[in-house]
Length: 218
Image 1: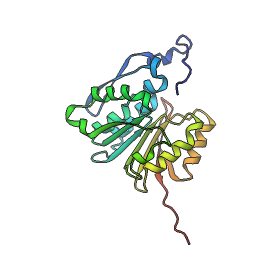
Image 2: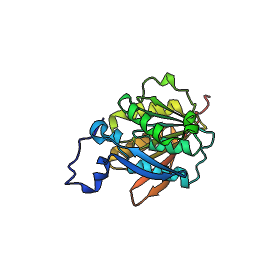
Image 3: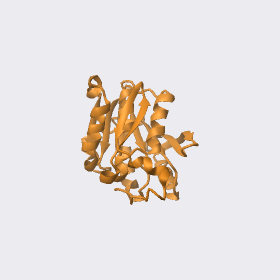
Image 4: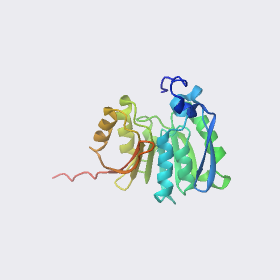
């Protein structure tokens, strides 16, 4: 779902999201990520939460080599692309309207010898989860996916399905409203959640969550 486009004259600092592409240096690669706000809205542009999460993956030395990772609500695919370049076997997901755009960014930025380590797949939270292995991912990644309260139940269901007690969730976001804090509280009902990084310049938090093990029945 796209947000209502803003007036660039009112918010010139955000005009970067109307550029057709953005360039980054991650994992010893120069990445050129296409953007398309007019066609895809929030799914077609790069948000600070994605950039900060990529920095964290690289600079915090998160071990991705050989790990099975999945990115939710990938949009342009920046996070999943960086995770692949850092050695992960990555599934990059979003809703159907974003997939062609997402595939183009992946093809453009993943070298041929690593194309087999990444796949783009349709995933609407809470739907068709049987197509994804239950508890089958070592690392679950999400950047700026917590902003629509109506999606919280489906997102929580999806996180619960994809993760096991050994999985690690990294969630990068800006806390804008009370509903964002509410999501973290809901997440805390099933996951052990802790803040592991804060980028003060961009006002972005990164939370690490691990699924709580079910208590044995008496």
